[in-house]
Image (cartoon, rainbow, N blue to C red; front, side, top):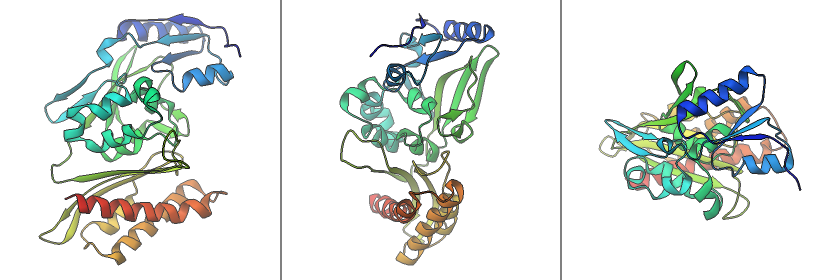
Length: 292
């Protein structure tokens, strides 16, 4: 099977990459960015994507860092899933992101696939995105006019659709340090135990005050179920300020399921997904409470 013909550029700095993208855009050419290539190479081989130019940013070493800066962690878009899964910094402060990264594909895919690629590809089934949503992550996009920063939930417009401009590059992911009292869980439901794309996944972070016996705060995000990633705010509202009881959990699960349907509409998979979303929320909340 042959690949489409295209030009190939390998910049070594962010500035060079942006200039190359901008020049292509000015000419009306279709330029795409190559990071790990685990999704892109398949699209090129199948010719579902036919670019004029491929910009390979794998040698932009400034985009491979994981570092703490004050009260936040900054992650370069070229950080691989394996790096996320093994990073002591990620595991200590934002372990739910490490948990999510460990579920991605196979070891080979985790070694090549990048966080930036997972985000920009905008697959509804992306495993890292629900974790980033409950962590209130922000994205740095760099273009010819400089940087702009936006919440990750504002980045997605729909399945495989984002607000990134043709001459912009994702250059950083900012993750605020969550409250130390929080406990987080990532769950993934797939057709098999490994090498699977998520049928549904869920990230949950909460603080259950054992002295007051109530949920102080809760963050929930269900993946692979809504057109774009969002917090399950209705379920969060039901839980916050309430005790840890089966009745409260059932109400929260039902609220999450109804919000999913409201966002996605009735589809052939709704009869399956609606009860499962509710069950995932209940299970995740229980596991998070048991953690702390």
